[in-house]
Length: 325
Ligand SMILES: Nc1ncnc2c1ncn2[C@@H]1O[C@H](COP(=O)(O)OP(=O)(O)OP(=O)(O)O)[C@@H](O)[C@H]1O
View 1 (cartoon, rainbow, N blue to C red):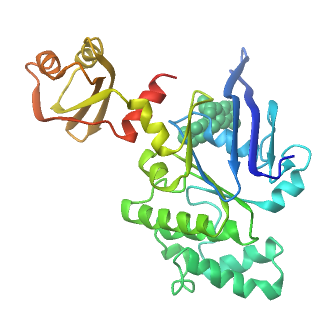
View 2 (cartoon, helix red, strand yellow):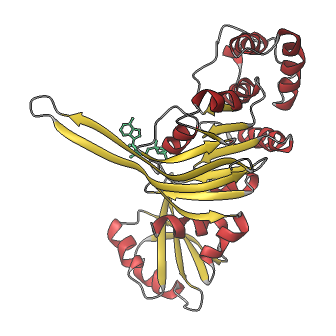
């Protein structure tokens, strides 16, 4: 059993227990992951998408053996993550967003040589493997420069190369595009899809629906420690079926106005996004009810910019899924 899937999670749970306070210590408990089950096929690019604190990192860390599940079980490449830790570790790579874990004073090439040695890549293999990975992550030609001069995007791609040195069957990519500018993020996405094309299974966590949509074969939306929806991007889009979206640009909308919008007949979700001085209000309503007039009446007296009505996108489906959690 288990050989058909790269990853199988079955009822995974994790509760963090701790204490706060010094004079009168109190026990604290956070149920970070509350019964997560899913499977990832070999060679699949699978996304775990969810808001801050949803439980994505905790889930990944149970799968890559860095954290013990409180209950439930998981297998990676058919091996149990608790009982066969060493076998699992040999078959996986782990790359997390951010800047840690590289030697700034060394060149990209020397970093990879160092980690190849550390990961026990056979000396005969090293040169070929490193050249192959530099090519994959688009750093060929820049490998002799010190990492301290690399942009965040380049560092992130070097991290990915590092995570792949020992040719893992499964790569865990935790928030790869965090803090990376949009152009670099696009290059990063190209690297990830090239990687998936080589047959490596990738489990990616992200906050960005657009990123998950572009890259992933299937996406699990996780919120509040549980999977709220799972499917291909096209399947997830159905969560916004039968809805219509009204977007309003506004300046200085009070909270009371936002809750009034939520109470309008036919309105299903509202979201507000701050864009400098401007606020973008997004209102989802039942498609057969025209709510635009009511919305504008509620916002009377507030300075408004563009108002526009459109079909829902995958992003709107994501909002609907997360809000229903
Ligand atoms: N070591 C820890 N001790 C106590 N609570 C923790 C610990 N790590 C995470 N948590 C809590 O568990 C919950 C899930 O956190 P987790 O990091 O898994 O979420 P996430 O989806 O990865 O979020 P983010 O996108 O912000 O990284 C959060 O409420 C978080 O505060």
